[in-house]
Amino acid sequence: VKVAVLKGGRSLERGVSLRSGARVEDALGALGHEVLALDVGAELVSSLRDGRPNAAFIALHGPGGEDGTVQELLEIVGIPYTGPGVAACGRCADKVVAKQLLRAAEIPTPDWVAFNAIAFRELGAADALEEIEQRLGFPLVVKPAGQGSALGVRFAAGREQVPDALVAAFSYDDRVLMEAYVAGRELAVSVIDGEPLPAVEVIFHADDTYDYEARYEIGRTDFACPADLDKGQASEISEVATQAYEALGCAGAVRVDLMLGDGGPMVLEVNAIPGLTDTSLLPMAAEAAGMSFEQLVERSVELALESRAAATT
Amino acid sequence: MKVEELAELLDRMAADGRRPKFIYSVPSFQNPAGVTLSAERRRRLVELARQYEVLVLEDNPYGLLRFEGEPQQPLYALDGGDYVLYVGTFSKILSPGIRIGWVVAPPPVLEKIGLGKQAADLCTSTLTQYFVREYFAEGRWRQYIADLTEIYRRRRDVMLEALERHFPASAEWTHPEGGLFVWATLPDYIDTNDLLAKALGEDVAFVPGRAAYVDGSGATSMRLNFSGSDEDEIREGIRRIGRVVAEQVELYETITREQPIIAPPGPAADVVPLPRKGKS
Image: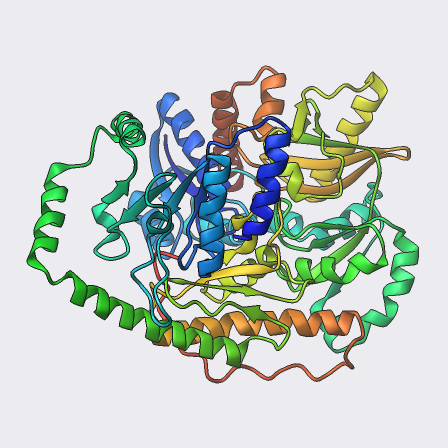
């Protein structure tokens, strides 16, 4: 099978994407597939037309690659691709839309309020900040609606930190959300074709757990896989993650990020195109389920080809 | 370098029984801030090196690129070569790709450097060394540096002028007398890592200040390089960065209600289209 690996691009997560892509290429090569590596750019559509791959493996992160844009182009060119479809990618990439759908499906997610910059610039949203802060409580989390990884995500421990956090988040998107902070354990459950993999727990050593950037420094984070959970917890978390996968209409392999607090698990977001580097959580979870990286890649490609076959029959 | 603080640090280290291997300094038009160590601080640094018997590595890649003011004496000259090792490079005065520099150091240190370099790169290509020798034997290098310095001086002037025009009144920046860099510092609620995301959307880049610190500070600063882009590009680039900064300032002020809500700015009519550059 000839597989195009889509990676790189102009996103701020280009570096991670290139690492994911390189690993996928190695795996595809080892599996005996023909690989067409594409650092995506203006030539993407013509490269796909010329290369005529049987499937595309999407190893892109951030806007463009993860939000349905590239998926839409692949639909037009008629090449089956890994991961969720156009609409599901759009739903996952917009954290606000995702949370609205989760709430509508009665899947627990932390309370939030979303704004665009116009609300502040033209509509005096600043006058509503006090009520919002009262409703969500401190600390609260401020996030850009449409950016992956931890870019632009800030904790605000008190009122005085809210304006800086908003300015930071608005650097990445015109829309941001302020979200209630859920104290508890941070978990990620990857779901492949509706089946949950073992949960991974992300454990931070840093005292300042409010510093998102510090979390990405080497040596300050540990992973436990499978996470140390009792049977009831583990099945509840898997259940919630699978519901989130269904609610957003996902396909292929995605990663659901959750917090396990006193009130049970809460879904923070769903990553439509999870990282596939050697420190990423999806490969870690697959490994815990007895699935090698090659098998994970092979399964993703199979699912892409199956979905295409299903669509044409 | 705040040499007063260096004295305190050396005292503290001595008290803890710790011995520094060497002190690294770019005394002229330092990367990233473009600032230069004063004559007084230079003298004091050399004194401290003697007093504490610590080597100083003087890295001087930009020293010949002076636009104004009097040249400062190298630390090496002040010290006489006892404690100061001097490192120069042809990267900034001939070509970065040539990858050749020179070291002036006491023979025992030189011997160790030679060993280390052999292990690192199996010695510099003799062919490129011949190129460099011929080039300098020909004698036109002084004129070339004079031409280069003039180009950089004009670019610096354009950048400083553009900063004056497009950056908010609350911003500050250095006025380098030479070299390649300006260091700008913004209001404390702006994080230049986040600002870079916005600036990249406008096809313009800078180095966020945190990259220059080991302790996570520098978040509100940025390094601006005026050597690699022409005058029009610098003008337009600073205008674009200035615009994203202004957006953040305005947003902050509306969030904190420091400023009444104002009508949004109209569409920018005078955008100069520039091709995206491969390097940034």
